[in-house]
Length: 531
Image (cartoon, rainbow, N blue to C red; front, side, top):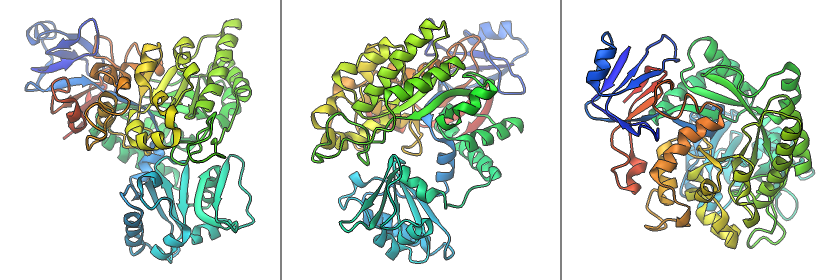
């Protein structure tokens, strides 16, 4: 038994918003729950044998959830070359420096470049050849929807002028048809098939190492959208009693038939590792301009992006999923992709009702831009708006440039909240940093870290209150996982997942929310990280 006292506790429970002390049962695993919130004297009377821990007036909040990240990819990217640079030249310098430390013929892997932020724009294979003449190079864009490779990588994969674009992918080419070194969407798979594959134990160790990084940001739960090798690693950690980060694990659409065959359903598992929804990609992304749009991108009259599936295919998959007890989580960024997904979900809801099936916690991942006629439909259909506020501040210039008059209908968190959709916030790491305080800052201010575009922020009518933003990283995320009766708040009966921070987020200036630091993180009654 443990009593935390002398604290400013924000419970995020409307029935009791604040407290100064709480009592926690202490089981050997991460299943300990909160017993009571009262003043310390009353708690000591009721739990006389409890250990006391004085928090010296510090602020306590519920543990935060990243409702959309790629856990294995993030963990492995911590080992890769950081390509988040202000210019292309700086990125090439980093590649050259890594090449001097890499054996000949060994792959150089990196992540994080964003051509929209580079004055020079996209790079070429020949520029990477000069930086790393002895090594194949594979650098994924921040969006993970594009890659920059050199000639050695193209050669290793057998990509030539004659290589056709794969379905749902594109090889960028020069005027004579030769590949430039930039690959989009499914074309990345032409290279990844030849990359050195981490062993199962490599995956386990990488995720275990990433746990402490995520705890240091205040994350106690994640919703993962990687594939089966990540699920295997998480199961290994769970079996070893080394998983101390709650994980909701999505199922890739290509595994749907197998999952249905064995009867696996959403919510199966325990409070540390459980099955989530079936993940489908409906389109690409804004960065490489592959998100599916009704009208062309500004300045690109032939480009409406790439639609990977339509509403009919989504309905077919959705009917199979809900009959088997599975929810659907669909990646949709462009207005056309979101429209197709909403049409499918409307029919899936009707199918659930007609067949007396339990309505599932269906989600749209990203919801980045909607047609004006579609803005209310997520709420009407009872869908989760799984969004990443930090995308808005990263993408605002690109959205204005390439979506033009459609930009005011993008990243509409306030609109979705007012329309009745449940907000569940995440980062899409490694696309962005998984630090939720950067996302909270973006949600409240609509400003970048440097303060741009000004005090009001970008499309300021979509700003959220701090309470609303925290709610999307806590209770909203818990609701999307079907765990709202035990996660996302500090209340009796809820799991003892909490964080201690260095400043009161309700007292600091909104622009300073990005600088909140963690002092300690607790999962299920156990301190798993301290600064």
